[in-house]
Length: 241
Image 1 (cartoon, helix red, strand yellow):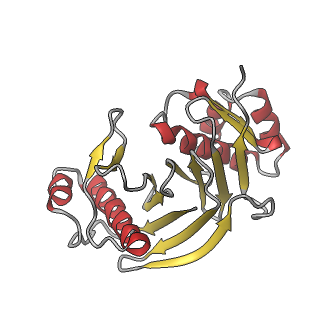
Image 2 (cartoon, helix red, strand yellow):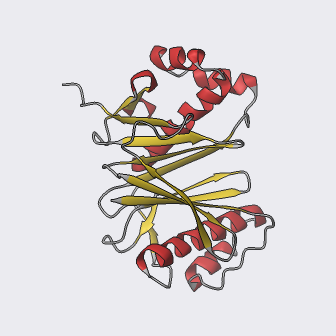
């Protein structure tokens, strides 16, 4: 089972929407310029993934779940998650059997004060792991990004933090909402990203979109213990009884 993470770095606010359904374009027209560009770009990337992976030429109808999470109206289609970091738009298309959550954040996008405030809500184990890393601010950002990706599996991003515990030193996590969860995160030159899955996804394909086509970057075997020097992979612990 494979999932797909694609991203597009916008260079302007004019996003071609010729392949998007009219309801998507019409809704976007009511948004402020910056939000409109990111909204349309995320749907363009999602449409490109559906075409690339499933051969579906037109973007399927998108609706909102009961908790406000965007999803395909057809429950037989895969789950997806959208994230933004500045002008970068990211889309995670999960495999057919589970949910996906995507988090993205720029490295050092927050001030030292903001990072310290973020760390104040972490567990003692998370704080100890952060202090042990070569770059504590980068490490704190990575844990924050992982937390957001896992919480987005059930649209709890920004709240519901009591349902999730991260144990980075042992490569584990515990999610009350999704007991069978894994997250994989990488720190690049400018961007920290995390992809979370509610069920085991053994491969993650990474793509770049340039406004015209997808270009495959590389593949991660998510079960591998040697996926990269700054890749952090967390898998579920059983729920406590």
